[in-house]
Image 1: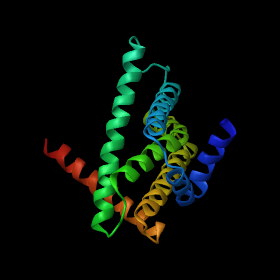
Image 2 (image 1 turned 90 degrees about the horizontal axis):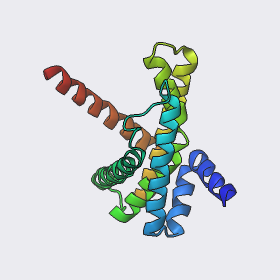
Image 3 (image 1 turned 180 degrees about the vertical axis):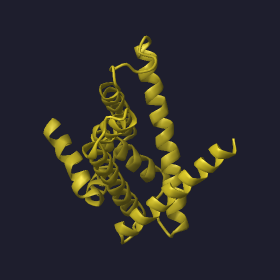
Image 4 (image 1 turned 30 degrees about the horizontal axis):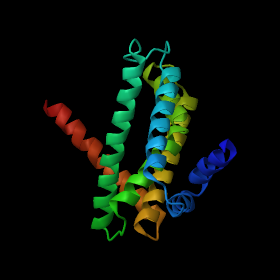
Length: 188
């Protein structure tokens, strides 16, 4: 079982379109999606605890509340992301439905939990001014792989021919959102 799961995660990074197609063809049931979200949330929390200097996380005194909050946040983020993927894809002629988007984004969250150490260690070192070229490289590689997997999943979910176009659209959306947030912060 662990070997199969490891192979599925590796396939998601190497061939995201094929991976999400297999995942959806298998017919993920609601409990599979929920379990994946819970496990993904837990993995990210544990990895973040290791990456944060001192190893302490907020709410550590109330560990159960911390983990439950993480799961609730993961469920909400998955629903929001699935909604954005659905609407944005439909605007550009995509054919996905919400159930497929939610299942695909749940699988994406689980897969990228394994990429999060690259991003978290890179950011942690950079923010604490201990990062050199290696920290920046970890951040770029982790983020790049996460975007690659996301674009592959979205392209397959909506039936788009080109993953590269979805990568470009994703980067454009991220840049526009970032500029909007910075503009709002400067105005405040």
